[in-house]
Image (cartoon, rainbow, N blue to C red; front, side, top):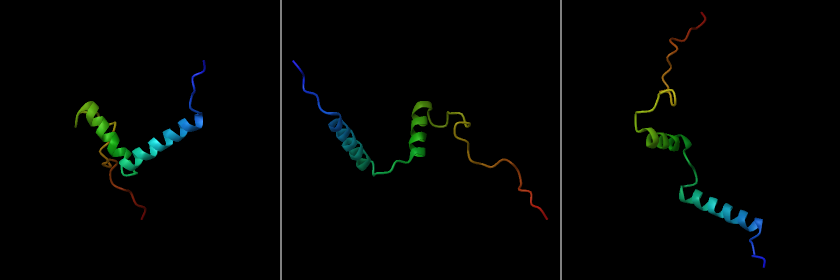
Length: 68
């Protein structure tokens, strides 16, 4: 007794439709940096993770040397 199974193409179509639906529900674009920050804040708590994971962005290399 064979059990009828959906074809691979049908499964791919369903996955693509669900992917499109979730993108539409999220506004179409995902800000990956904001999502990363939310995940890190959930895991480690706000302000508790090591700054080396996400540096502050301040340039601490000193003054820029120019040639006269």
